[in-house]
Length: 386
Image (spheres, helix red, strand yellow):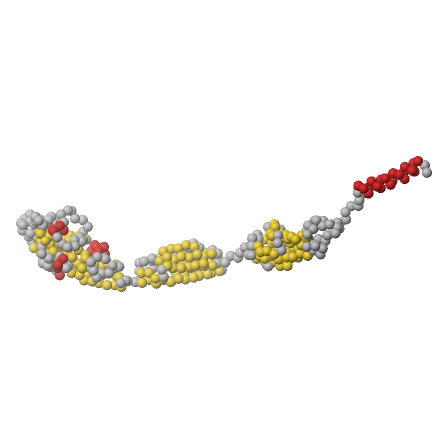
C-alpha cells in the first residue's frame, strides 16, 4: 500500500467519526414529525364538540357549549374554545355564553394533553341574528278611572316597536311613551293603537264621568241680622227686624242698609250656576235716585251688625247697581253669582246697600228706599255631588 492509499484509509474513518458526533449529516424531518408539543413517543389528543345548544339564535341569547377530549397515551388537561369573530370564548369543557356578536360564527374547540400537545380543532357553527322587531303595548292606563265633571285624569302609555301610535278619540298621533291629562265631559273609551307595517296592536281604557246633581234654594234676608245704620254722632243701628232703609232723612243723616242671608245649607263643593235677584217689593220716600244717584250693593261679611260697620271710605267692588226704580225688577246677576260662590263654605252671605254719589242732598227732606226683609229674595241655583 502506498502512502496515498494509507491517507485515504485513515481520513475516512476520522470524517465518519466527526459526522456522527456533530449530527451535521442527519436526515431532514419527515411530514410525520411531531408538532405542537408532541414528541416521537406522544400521541396528540382528539377534541370532540358534544353540543352547541343553538344552530341559530338572536342577539343576547344564552348559548351553552359542551365538549370533551380523548388522549390515548395520557390525560386531557386543558380546553380552548374560540370564535372566528369574537376570538377566545372559554377555557373549560362546558360553559354558557350570551355575548356572541351578530354574524355566522365558526366555533373551534381544542384540547391539550399532559405533555403539552394540542389537538386539531373540532369545528361547529352558529348564526347570531338581530332580535326580531315586533309591536308591543307595554302598558296603557288611566288614573283615576272615575272623575267628577270638570276634573282631570291622566292617560299613560308605553309602546315598543311601533312606527306609529295613535290615541283616540280626539287626540291623534302620539309618542311611543308619554302621558297626558284629559277632562272629558262624558263617559269615554280611549283606544291606543300601535302600528308597524301590517302589524296592529290596540288596547283601550274607559273613564266614567260623574255629573253633579242640580239644586236650587230660595233665600230671604234674616230679620234678626239685617238692619240699617244712621251715620250720626255716634252712628246708630236701627233695631233689627224692621227691614232696611238706604238714603237720607230729613235731618240730612245718611243711612246704609245691611242684609244677611243664611247659606249654611249650600254644600261646600257647590258650583253656583246662576242667581236670580228679586228686590222688586220695596217702598220709596222722596226721590232718592234723582237726588242721591245710583244705589249699589257690596259684599260685606259684617257678622254681628254694629255701628262700626257703617262705611265711610270710597267703596269699590259693587255686584249690583240700580240707577232708577224701573231697574229694580227680578233679574239674573253674574256679579251676585260670583259673590255667593266666593262665600260658599261659610254660614252667611252678607251685603251692604248704599248710595255712592251723595250720602245726603242736604235738602232737609227724606230720600230713601226701604225693604222689609221678606222683600229681599235670592233664588240660588247650584250643582253639587253631596
